[in-house]
Image (cartoon, rainbow, N blue to C red; front, top):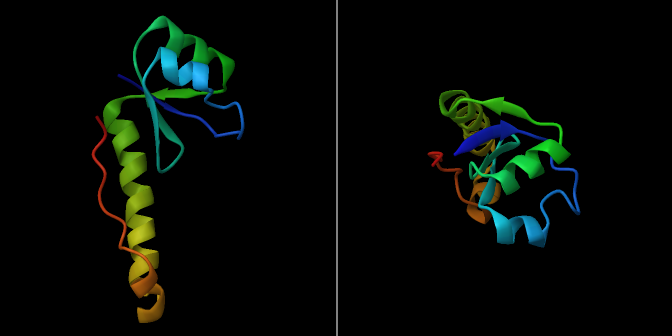
Length: 92
């Protein structure tokens, strides 16, 4: 797996063709995890990405989740009733 930080620019950021050629998934903090193959390399080359280690990427995700949990905990009971408290995510 390759771990990168990249800003999702909207339509065309990850195309149907991309998804049919390699595995990719986005996580909080603009963290993206891809296969380590030529098609995924091409996708990374088309975008401005910063490669991270798994530990670095996990730390970014953990920070985003902690911030979201803090915001949830500070929200009113009515707001909490409408959503779930963000759960921890472990990167593959």
